[in-house]
Image 1: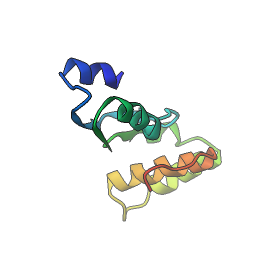
Image 2 (image 1 turned 90 degrees about the vertical axis):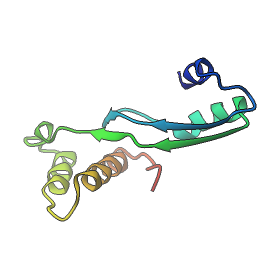
Image 3 (image 1 turned 30 degrees about the vertical axis):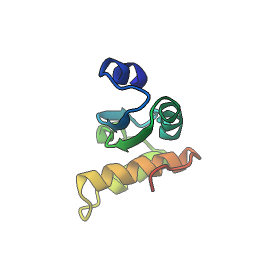
Image 4 (image 1 turned 45 degrees about the vertical axis):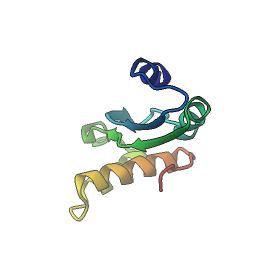
Length: 106
């Protein structure tokens, strides 16, 4: 957990903490930054979380998918006007919306 890593790094209750989240997440992975922030705010003087995670998506998984999700991913991935980062963000938020979840960070 993040609190263990911060404690191991020598952070104390009087510390100003900036946590940068990195890496790739599967499209079905849940990430609750609000919860993480609430946990850290109780332990440290000040806490800031920066989310630099990327969506781990393999377009091949959706090439033959005959669902709305598949059509959505193929359409976004085929858009030549978007950068790879923008495509990943649109797909991430779009898949959340299709699942009926609230999109954080917009």
